[in-house]
Image 1 (tube, rainbow, N blue to C red):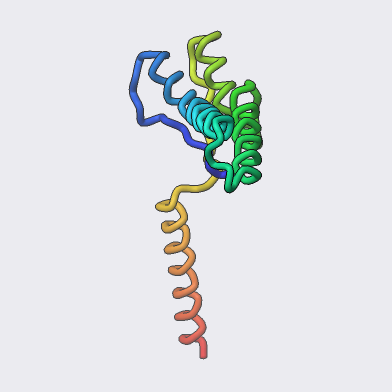
Image 2 (cartoon, one colour):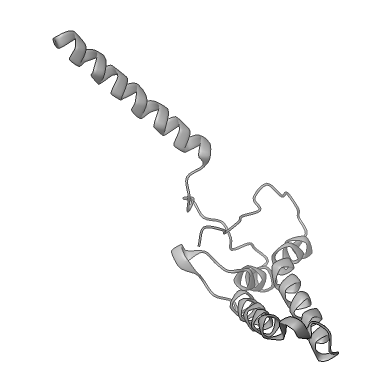
Length: 129
C-alpha cells in the first residue's frame, strides 16, 4: 500500500525513459516467472515444485494487476496507467499534491514542536506550584 514511488527528481524529456522506468517492475516479474516456468518445464527445480508453481502464479497475478491500467488506493495510478497516459496523452499521471506518507523530516519537525510545547507546559506547571 505504501510502496508507491514517484520519480519527480528525474528530469527527462523523453517519454521512452519514463515508460522504461515504469515498465521495469512488470518486465522483471514477467521475465523471472517465465524463467522459473522454463526451468520447471525442463525438469529442474523439481524438489520444490509446488512452491515454484505457486510463485509463478502470484508473479503473473502481480503482473496482471500492475499492467492493466487502473487507479489504485488513494487515487494512485498503477504502472500500467502511467504507461497508458504517457503513450496516449504524452504526460505522466503519477503526480499527487499530498503525500501518502509524510516525509521523515516533516514528522521529525512536528515531533520537535510537540516536545517543545510539552516542555513549556511542564515549566509553567512547575512555576505555578
